[in-house]
Structures are given as structure tokens and as C-alpha cells.
Length: 240
Image (cartoon, rainbow, N blue to C red; front, side, top):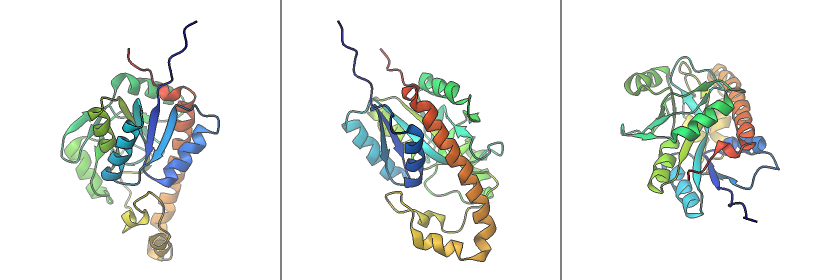
């Protein structure tokens, strides 16, 4: 009797602790052993380090999973962006695995709104509608994050397939709170002092209330996406 081949190991890389909580909750306690979640911390440097560690540990494929900022006005909070291409900050473009992406889109369409437009990688937070509109006009991207490009680049250099699934948390028309980049430490954990300072500033209250609703919807969708994909090993099928 021939033994079944070992299951492929899929590295699911998230940037933030809050994203990891949603993903782990979606995967559940009985998730497949092949699904390994790694929290990188924010930014391309941290994401690249986590991706390299995953490749060196024997990962067979990589997923960039987490939240994103919306650039296209049509995108609402909770929309899952599953891009066919990732546009780096320097203008270069990396393709995601087409067949794998298609299977993920098909699986998620039953539960979530999906957009397959390009994902932009920014080296700074796009915190105003004007900055978001300029980025969308210049690149044609529908959403933005800071980590997926580094993950895709490491995967490409290692010869591994990769996809990104990023859920929209703030919309094209949203202005983010001043100094929001200081709310997260280098490991992806919340920093309480700057968050508390924003909460204690009445000028910030309308923005914070709106973004809290946006993030709640996005986190629900992220948990739902992780749960749906976990049931099928993230729709991964090794190529012969």
C-alpha cells in the first residue's frame, strides 16, 4: 500500500497581533497542521524576515493575510482583496499564483465581497483621501498595505507560490488619525500610550468612532475568510 505524500506546509504571514487573533480564531483549534501562522510585525523589513524564516523552515507556499487600506472608492470595509498582481513601492510588479488565487476567489465569493484588483505596497501610511486618490490614479491599485510585496518577493526568490488575501479596513474617503503609525510597535502589538492619547482628544472622537466600526467589519470578514479557507487547506494544490 502506497503512503500518502506529506501535506504541504503553508505559511500564513500576518503583520499585527490583532490580525493574528482574528486569523487564529477563524482557523480554530482543530485546524490542519499544515497551516502555520507567523506574526511578522509591520513593514516590509519585518515581513521579509518572517517570509525568509518560513522558507528556511520548509514552507511550501506563502499567504499574506491581513488588513488593507481601500484605494478604490467602490471598496467597502470587509471586502477581501485577492490581487492578481502586487505593485511595489518602486513601481515593479510581482504576480501572485494565478491558479491558486482563482481557487481562493471561488471559495470566498460564497461568504464575502471580493475584488481582484491590484494591491499597492506603500512605504508609509496613506492617511488622507488625497494621498489615497493619488496612489490609485498613479498605479491603478484598488487597495494598499505594507507587507505583501516583501512576502511575495521572498517567495519568488525561493521558488514558492504565493497569494495575498487582504481585507479592507479603511475606505478611500477616510482620514486616519494623526500619528497612527505610532500605535503599533515593531512586533505588531498595540502601544497603549499613543492610543490613549488619541482617545483622550475629543477632536479625534468622530474619526475613531468611524474607524472602529470599519475595523470591526474588517475583522469579522478576516476571521470568516480564515475559517472558510482553513476547511480546504487554503485551497492550495501543489503543482506536479
